[in-house]
Image (cartoon, rainbow, N blue to C red; front, side, top):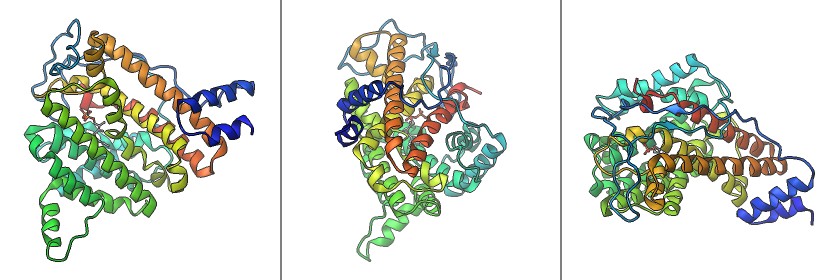
Length: 398
Ligand SMILES: CC(C)=CCC/C(C)=C(/C)COP(=O)(O)OP(=O)(O)O
């Protein structure tokens, strides 16, 4: 058996990663490199965030060390800067397309009722730009809008149900709300006498209305397997929301491994899962769910979410309860300063991106043209995501 076929028939583990490295080394060539930007210069984190829900933001100087492991988590103080990250550049910047998507997204948010009274802050957040940057293989505004609606509806569930008490978040209601939210995404089919009550509940809750409306829109472009995949990823997202609320309620800081498990599903995964639907092609379910593809893909999505952890620290330090992000849990477990924990978080981010890059190159060489395009699209998503996080007023005042 050749090393290549052995690599492709081996279970998706770190062992596979080692095998891939050996394979590429033995062939006397480096892994086919995807284009990568030189590390971005460190970005200053503003002293006071001004995105959605940040009215009272005031940031204290960073403490000398984090809370002891197991202690009730302390509010993180923002580090001075986000370190350079290993990440590709954004493939394109098209402000006019971003504006069109953003304007239509805000109109839709007003229609479904999410972020009521905060639509101008939402406009400034510029999710239209996020979608324009992360899906460079289409300039079709309606496709980008459909995906933007999905992402914003997911984000609204996080803000309205989990994070923002002023928007109605209540930990006691979270589990039941997320269960019904799941039914708005993956429709619950009730006996006839109960169905109207579910319909009424969806109609009366802006987050549920948004989720259903977004799913309706994306099915213009996503086939049943892609829509089913999206519902699966959203279920994982909701499970992650619940776990995070559990930490908060118990006053417990999770160990780093458990936090990272959570950040795989409580992540941008549902957004990145739309790369092919937005691009107008379809990765077959057998390839999307191949454990080796899933390993590489989920690592990329976790890395994208760690970018969020790093850039949103200042904003999160404003929230009333304890907030979790990778630097906070590392500081607690490793008893180091938050600055040091930020540095260690960036290294973990980089490890995930390097692993994705190496394994995706091998998978692309052996996979279908659709898989090849999907992995390249995921790579492009990482670049667009980092670019958006490093510029959006959500995390940078403004
Ligand atoms: C899929 C999606 C858009 C979900 C939103 C929640 C999520 C996975 C994020 C990465 C947002 O992170 P966080 O909860 O930390 O929120 P902020 O970045 O503080 O806005």
